[in-house]
Amino acid sequence: MPKVDLQDRSGAKLGDRDLPAELFEAKVNVPLMHQVVVAGLAALRAGTHSTKTRAEVRGGGRKPWRQKGTGRARQGSIRAPHFTGGGVAHGPKPRDYEMRVNKKMKRAALRGALTDALASGKLALVDDLSFDEPKTSAALEVITALDLTGKILLVLPAPEELTEKSFRNLPYVKATYAPSLSVYDLLAADRVLFTRAALDVLEGKDPGDSVAGGSEPERSGGDGAKRPPAAEATGSTPATPPRKAGKNEATDSSPNAPDAETGPGDGEES
Image 1 (cartoon, rainbow, N blue to C red):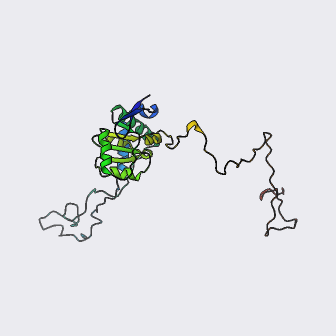
Image 2: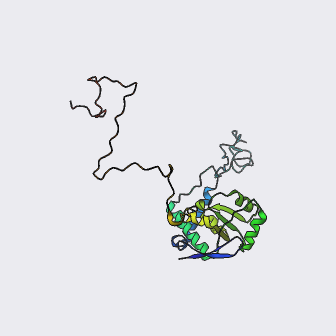
Image 3: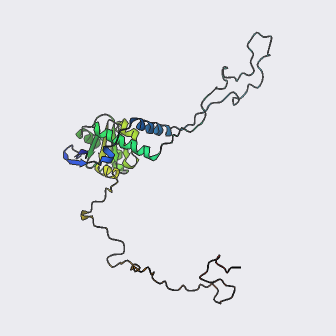
């Protein structure tokens, strides 16, 4: 099972953390990762570029000179593409650059990127990154103590205002969240710094689940609240009390009134 060193914010080693093999010992499929990265970058494009053709440019409805007798080349409009101020031939038009990549491909590419980050030594794990106040100098001390250089990807379990404000003034640090971790960010970074809680979220664990013994939390209602008794094994259901007739419901039993046990379509056969 792969392992990574667990450090505190001062750089001291606290121990080893076992990593799940399905995430950090997966197959590294380079063409698949390339496809997912290209699709992700293409999805960021707005696709609002537009140019005018010769039919959309204003003017040019009159023939500039007669067809013969001038010695010039024949022209039909001054808004043709080879004229200054004319239309653009084969220019870009608004379009959607989205590329379809299914979920299995995205997950396989992410597993490959995580495996590559661990194998190349880019992965680092810190116990906690809580700050009392936003302070860039404190964030810089953490980076120096952990010996992180180059472009750094900081992975947090969820939005943390104080931590993000402490790191956001550093141009070489990008903060992201474990549920939305992307393949492009993992491949583009020189070092990837996980917090212990972020790694728990990535593995599908609850970072707040630290109750010893696995005891189940109490339900609302106190100790005296009890569940209603379940039906017996014979299959009989508990009897329900009869429903009282409302004010607007008819109390007389007329022959035209439908039977209570029959539905609207359960009439007698004709």
